[in-house]
Image (cartoon, rainbow, N blue to C red; front, side, top):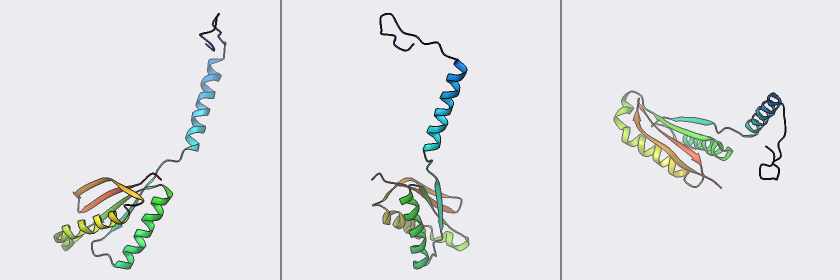
Length: 124
Protein backbone atom coordinates (compact mmCIF):
# COMPACT_ATOMS: atom_id res chain seq x y z
CA UNK A 1 0.00 0.00 0.00
CA UNK A 2 1.40 3.35 -1.04
CA UNK A 3 -1.49 5.58 0.11
CA UNK A 4 -4.15 3.66 2.09
CA UNK A 5 -6.02 6.88 3.01
CA UNK A 6 -6.58 7.94 -0.63
CA UNK A 7 -9.91 7.33 -2.34
CA UNK A 8 -9.51 4.74 -3.93
CA UNK A 9 -6.49 3.32 -1.99
CA UNK A 10 -3.28 3.24 -4.01
CA UNK A 11 -1.19 0.05 -4.07
CA UNK A 12 2.04 -0.82 -5.87
CA UNK A 13 3.01 -4.26 -7.10
CA UNK A 14 6.69 -4.99 -6.45
CA UNK A 15 9.16 -7.83 -6.59
CA UNK A 16 9.37 -8.96 -2.94
CA UNK A 17 12.88 -10.46 -3.36
CA UNK A 18 14.20 -7.18 -4.71
CA UNK A 19 12.46 -5.30 -1.86
CA UNK A 20 14.11 -7.51 0.80
CA UNK A 21 17.50 -7.16 -0.92
CA UNK A 22 17.26 -3.35 -0.90
CA UNK A 23 16.25 -3.37 2.78
CA UNK A 24 19.27 -5.51 3.70
CA UNK A 25 21.60 -3.23 1.74
CA UNK A 26 20.17 -0.18 3.53
CA UNK A 27 20.71 -1.86 6.92
CA UNK A 28 24.30 -2.75 6.02
CA UNK A 29 24.97 0.83 4.95
CA UNK A 30 23.52 2.15 8.23
CA UNK A 31 25.67 -0.30 10.23
CA UNK A 32 28.78 0.67 8.30
CA UNK A 33 28.23 4.35 9.07
CA UNK A 34 27.89 3.87 12.80
CA UNK A 35 30.98 3.38 14.92
CA UNK A 36 30.84 0.79 17.69
CA UNK A 37 32.17 1.95 21.02
CA UNK A 38 35.21 -0.09 21.98
CA UNK A 39 36.22 -1.05 25.49
CA UNK A 40 39.88 -0.28 26.16
CA UNK A 41 41.61 -1.61 29.27
CA UNK A 42 44.43 -0.01 31.25
CA UNK A 43 46.04 -2.04 34.03
CA UNK A 44 47.68 -0.51 37.10
CA UNK A 45 49.62 -1.92 40.01
CA UNK A 46 49.26 -0.46 43.50
CA UNK A 47 53.02 0.27 43.54
CA UNK A 48 52.93 2.32 40.31
CA UNK A 49 55.29 5.27 40.21
CA UNK A 50 54.12 8.87 39.76
CA UNK A 51 55.50 9.25 36.22
CA UNK A 52 54.12 5.88 35.09
CA UNK A 53 50.75 6.89 36.49
CA UNK A 54 50.86 10.16 34.50
CA UNK A 55 51.66 8.29 31.27
CA UNK A 56 48.82 5.79 31.75
CA UNK A 57 46.44 8.60 32.73
CA UNK A 58 47.34 10.34 29.47
CA UNK A 59 46.42 7.16 27.56
CA UNK A 60 43.10 6.95 29.42
CA UNK A 61 42.37 10.61 28.59
CA UNK A 62 43.12 10.01 24.89
CA UNK A 63 40.84 6.97 24.78
CA UNK A 64 38.00 8.90 26.44
CA UNK A 65 38.41 11.84 24.07
CA UNK A 66 38.17 9.44 21.12
CA UNK A 67 34.85 8.22 22.53
CA UNK A 68 35.92 4.80 23.80
CA UNK A 69 34.85 3.23 27.09
CA UNK A 70 37.85 2.58 29.36
CA UNK A 71 38.19 -0.20 31.93
CA UNK A 72 40.71 0.66 34.62
CA UNK A 73 42.00 -2.36 36.52
CA UNK A 74 44.14 -2.38 39.66
CA UNK A 75 45.93 -5.75 39.84
CA UNK A 76 47.33 -7.13 43.10
CA UNK A 77 50.08 -9.75 43.40
CA UNK A 78 51.55 -11.55 46.37
CA UNK A 79 51.94 -9.37 49.46
CA UNK A 80 50.17 -6.47 47.73
CA UNK A 81 46.94 -8.25 48.72
CA UNK A 82 47.43 -6.92 52.26
CA UNK A 83 47.05 -3.34 51.00
CA UNK A 84 43.76 -3.63 49.12
CA UNK A 85 42.36 -0.51 50.74
CA UNK A 86 45.27 1.64 49.52
CA UNK A 87 44.92 0.26 45.99
CA UNK A 88 41.20 0.93 45.96
CA UNK A 89 41.79 4.50 47.15
CA UNK A 90 44.30 5.07 44.36
CA UNK A 91 41.82 3.70 41.82
CA UNK A 92 39.07 6.05 43.08
CA UNK A 93 41.53 8.94 42.92
CA UNK A 94 42.32 8.13 39.29
CA UNK A 95 38.59 8.02 38.49
CA UNK A 96 38.06 11.39 40.22
CA UNK A 97 40.80 12.95 38.08
CA UNK A 98 38.67 12.20 34.98
CA UNK A 99 35.39 13.47 36.48
CA UNK A 100 35.18 16.41 34.05
CA UNK A 101 35.35 14.28 30.89
CA UNK A 102 33.95 10.92 32.02
CA UNK A 103 31.63 9.24 34.47
CA UNK A 104 31.92 5.89 36.21
CA UNK A 105 29.61 3.36 34.57
CA UNK A 106 30.52 0.23 36.52
CA UNK A 107 32.50 0.12 39.77
CA UNK A 108 33.04 -3.51 40.69
CA UNK A 109 34.41 -4.73 43.97
CA UNK A 110 37.39 -6.97 44.61
CA UNK A 111 37.21 -9.87 42.16
CA UNK A 112 40.03 -12.34 41.43
CA UNK A 113 42.88 -10.26 42.90
CA UNK A 114 41.80 -7.05 41.18
CA UNK A 115 39.63 -3.97 41.48
CA UNK A 116 38.15 -2.53 38.31
CA UNK A 117 35.88 0.23 37.11
CA UNK A 118 34.60 1.31 33.71
CA UNK A 119 34.66 4.96 32.62
CA UNK A 120 32.34 6.26 29.92
CA UNK A 121 32.92 9.59 28.14
CA UNK A 122 30.36 12.16 29.25
CA UNK A 123 28.23 13.85 26.60
CA UNK A 124 29.53 17.23 25.43
